[in-house]
Picture 1 (spheres, rainbow, N blue to C red):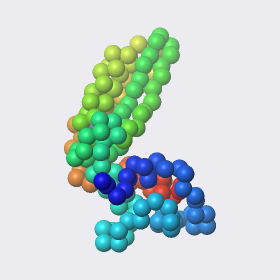
Picture 2 (picture 1 turned 135 degrees about the vertical axis):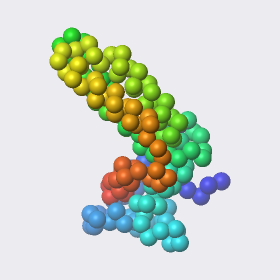
Picture 3 (picture 1 turned 45 degrees about the vertical axis):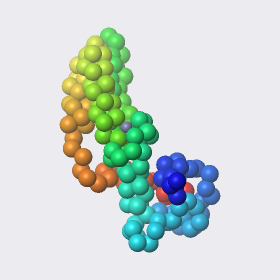
Picture 4 (picture 1 turned 60 degrees about the vertical axis):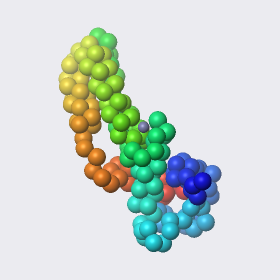
Length: 155
Ligand SMILES: [Zn+2]
């Protein structure tokens, strides 16, 4: 039995905001599991590490580093081009699989619009390739850290 679930904490919107200090990304006094004093004085880093070392929300596997992965998508039809980004919290393997799918669909569907499909599709392809090839840094990414910070601040 684990004593705490970082995801539950990270996604838990039911805790009451402490109110006064906007910068109390520092711990919301009674809400959620308090970081053990020995681990770190930085709750953001503590929770980012807890998420990183937790189970993957996508494949439920434990032991593969979890982080935010942002895929890029685009599709076009004649004069219409739609594109965007999708951020998922998942392990490296799921992230790579997501990048490959996004790469495939962008390569197939992106080009068929003029002019934006032709202009933007190469960028989307490159961004998915970069995501796919990116090495794990060994610690929570700046994006994950920022995401945790925003969620703690919003408690
Ligand atoms: Zn996974």
